[in-house]
Amino acid sequence: MPATTDPAVARAWLTDHSAAGTEGVVAKRLDQPYRPGGRTWRKIRTRLTAEAVVGGVLGSIARPEALILGRYDTNGRLRVAGRTTPLPRPARTELGRILTPEAAGTHPWPVTIPSSRFGQRPSEPIDYVQVAPRTVVELEVDTSFEQDRWRHATRYVRVRADLHPGDVLVLDPPA
Image (spheres, rainbow, N blue to C red):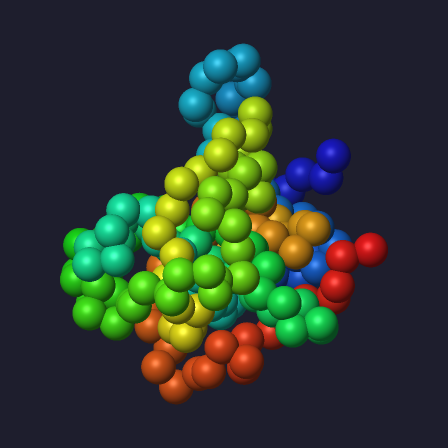
């Protein structure tokens, strides 16, 4: 495993190697041994921004607690791509004014989603409120994007009123 004491080299690993799957670096003191179960080492993740379409919420539409996110595949199908961490209070208020319910029976997703779609194991069904997939949001994400989804929860940054859902990056269709 590579190691360095040079912060510039560690920064380069974070920024230059994310496409190769490097999620981050571990920072620790030179004299600090690994202790199982301890929290003395820090993992610093590479963070990027991305856009996604809001397809559902945890909580209520009027006061969403977290967002269920989607991205379109090349066939035009909105695929579940992840979820956010709990939303800050101001974002709950802002999104509560913008999001609208989807007409019954017209949403592209089932009424429950397996938690494995969000990287959570063992998989449990997640109940959520479907919303009309018209709102695009900007997110802070890490580099763990696999099988057309973010493996870890994303962080909400802002609404992208300047973008239409069709403007969001298209995913390759599943094999």
